[in-house]
Image (tube, rainbow over all chains, first blue to last red; front, side):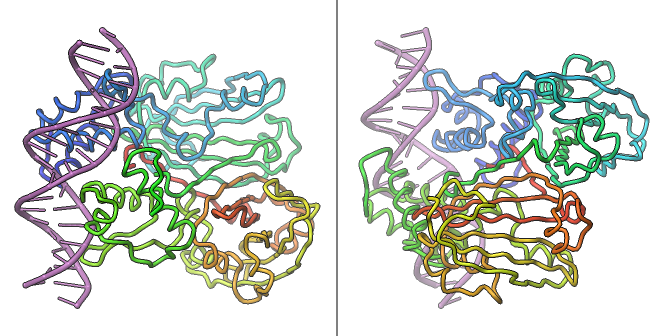
Length: 240
Length: 240
DNA sequence: AAGTGGTCTAGACCACTAT
DNA sequence: TAGTGGTCTAGACCACTTC
């Protein structure tokens, strides 16, 4: 119970619980204290405890079940912004077979020249992974990923030959903040060859940076053939 | 006071107020009843009224000011998904002069062959507007817009020679739902000429469909040179 | 059947700010 | 300085769900 002195009571409780969840101390599936117990712990009324838990539930961090209690939810961070990026699920939703191929994997002692990552030091140790996601027999998406080994040291010992690094990462780093950058580029010769499209084809580039409470985690760049992909984001005001 | 019988008390009040705001009956800037008055109107406690107004504020539909009251907010629907699309603000934020040029404007009696709009009937009357947004002396973004004249009949009498249709629309249709589609294409000959880029340049295409409570409002397609534009979306779990 | 979350109340005190 | 939103309480009843 850290209970700093800033802010309102329920925002302090909220911050405490968020930290416990985001840090992984309370992993997905962990049961939170009941409302009455939480109220007793913090010496507040049940209404205040309820407000905190309701807010956590609305933010998607916990799931509440009557008679059972409140539980830390499974991480689905990026889905909330753009409903993409579980590439396997995306491919399968098109009724195509999903395939994964590791193309390259290096351990670097400094940031590569061709992919800037402003969040971390120039000499930070990194894993550098290039892989290809397939839909049926056709290339679907080219993935280039840097992983910060200071934040996720175990990544150095993973080969990523069978498991996409994204899947492995999400099991390691339970929750995170993310930022997406979306732009369009013409396929370079190398990209075109790997994606099996004509050189110069317009491609959609999605770059995502991810943070955990411990620091920057990963920078990943997805390149999709523009004619084979579309991002969709919906918005309804007032749904909160 | 519609006060249907479904759901909880505060969700009924919420639905009432949402309808008044989304329909435009309470336009942006309109002052809502004070918490005490709202509580009296619905015969509930102030806590319940507060919960409703707090929720509306968090959803961005209203803005609350101490001592003054609560006011319907300016519509900023699309900003909540991707922080773009007030192109003028975007250009000015780059410290460039903003310019606008109307290229074409037609009234159609049916959907055009080259731009599908699945939400509306094939023979719906439409305004079809092509315009160019400039940053300094260079083209910044090409805009092609269809407006549903059944939902927004006044658009038929607007020339859009001086005012971008987006600005005018937002003043007419107070709130809306939106859906974005983002993809990449190679510039066609016509697009390349208008944007002053080489033919075949990778371009970022953002297509937005907008609805009001009365029905589909507009379909707009923005085409940006890929090297001159980038979409950014941030996400922090737990911020609600 | 018991325990949990969901909701609501009537009242209170405080902080901020527009007047 | 008075009015408004922001927050909190102690208690209550209900509905649902698992035990």
